[in-house]
Image (tube, rainbow, N blue to C red):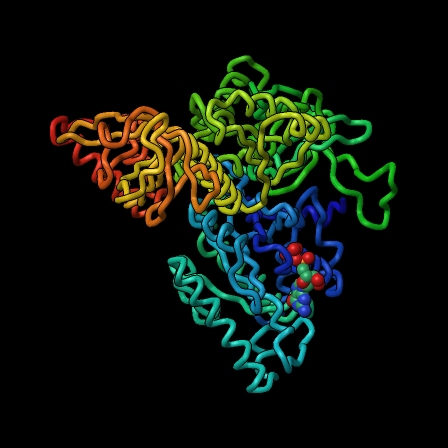
Length: 604
Ligand code: GDP
């Protein structure tokens, strides 16, 4: 690229702050980034904007040009801002650098009409957890009814031209947003009222479409970085490069390549680098460093141009051998010095970084796949909170092997793959069709967890129903007077069910004190002339009982019980109490009470 721009951009020894743009889908992340690039072009500063791999660098000169009176460039010595621009890929927010967030600072885009949405909440949780400072871009102010657009103007200037009606409509939405932020534990206000951006969140009303408010956003970001991040930006700009893998991509002629955000130091062609791999750190040599060609020159076969070195902060594509096993979100480190000790030290650092992200796995549990190490870690945290054990957790698309592993889970509720922001490989699709494994995928972590929890609940309910079908239910019933239809072989009598459910083919007992004496077995139930399998409390039915003779073992007026096997009584009391009717509980309690008079531990 143009050596003059490099010069202005890399002036001094402070590195460029890395800015992430997050927010719910359709709230305007892409439009905002396009607008920032586009307005810079309009300001005639296009040459100064550099398109990196996966990032756009906006130098201070461009920012001050765009921000006009809002910015005095002499107030700043940071070189500009580097926007990571893979916004479709919202989980990049979970990419990390040395235990922190990859981004130094973030813009949370919220549609003023739509307010907080699931991915907004998730982004906030991530920002909170990683302690990343952020500002809120309250986007789409131009959609306020009666809005009078002020192309590219600072927002307060634009607000002055709006009707009272439009202003108050917008304010309503903005205050709601400020309320939502405070609900999340952040005190927020319009950015021009915020004194201390460390303890308060600045809200910048803007329109990515018309550009009004964008000068303000850039000014706030610049001010925030200058004020609170200068120390972190004072790095050894000439030291060995350190970065994070955004993506692993196959490129024609290069094989697997790494899209990297370099946040520290320099990387040069020919450098030895260590990259976090699936099993072991990968040691390889940089064959080429690639940057996008300026727009005008894009031709399919020559999309990239080679550069000899890249300095932080920057986005760059690294082509090198043996990168197939590299993971998104993994660290990349340049090794300086060609002795074995230097290499070992860097490998150790990479291993340690990866170890910090290692997920605790259990003997039995679900299989988790995520697009980056950072999102895998976020998934693992969410699952731990929900007390869902993990059998295996890995970065990458869902492969047939994952289906095989999920199938080995012991519990049915664990024969599950949870995929976050990943694709299902074609072979895996086929494997899933033939396997008894359920796949859940979503791009919002807590929704993924909720979907899985709902599934577990449903599965458990179905299992309980099956158990309930097999179990003997309690029942107390009475032989009616003058209702003996047959004396014996079998005895046939009319009965009234007092509580519980009488099921056919169950043993019938009569209590003598606390001992249920078996009198026979039910061999038929008739309700109004029809054969039925069971009868409930309140019903009058005739029953056939194999065994007794009316007038000897049983009499008209006798109270009879269905005999409960001890194991069934225990399951009913301990596991299924919430699944059975109140009158069944009553029958169960009465039965237990009788039995426990002589054996207090019966059924426990
Ligand atoms: P993303 O999913 O967050 O990247 O959202 P996009 O940038 O793709 O925007 C989603 C939709 O909202 C698109 O149709 C945009 O044109 C529209 N949009 C984004 N910002 C604005 C804005 O400030 N004003 C208006 N009127 N529309 C916007």
